[in-house]
Length: 173
Image (cartoon, rainbow, N blue to C red; front, side, top):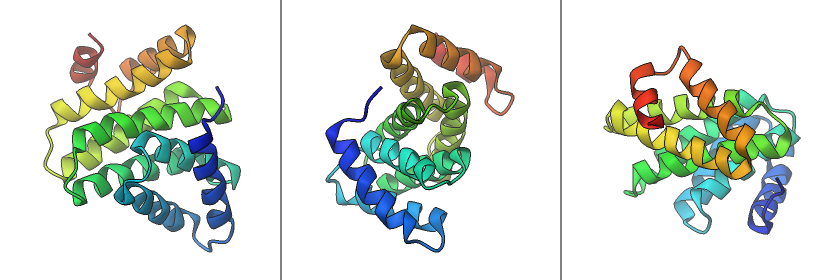
């Protein structure tokens, strides 16, 4: 997969900022929040660019994924936006970003879904609705990448001990 021109522009800006930061994780949170709250870019594009940028500057991919997804969902909630849409789009963006940098799609999907569910719970959403939307975002992105990617993500979500198995299986249909 290749980055869209929108994501490439965001990524380039983020990399410049992250390279100059003394604390990359805090800088990543600030960038994601600013981009999401500003409403200039789609949540999925912001998260995709964030995880790709963080990887490019040497930040641990798993940590960057969870930070980007959680921050995007919280920022949308704080701005009074559609939290469940943000859950879907942020997880989708994380999976697309994982594909771009060659990370394990299943592991990225599980990490992103965990972060989305946790954050959605903090803002008053039920686990049931958060799982449904997060899993939907992960699977949609993986299916766009390809058949094997879709299978890998579904298998990883089903096998993840950290996720509520019954809700994941229900969301997968």
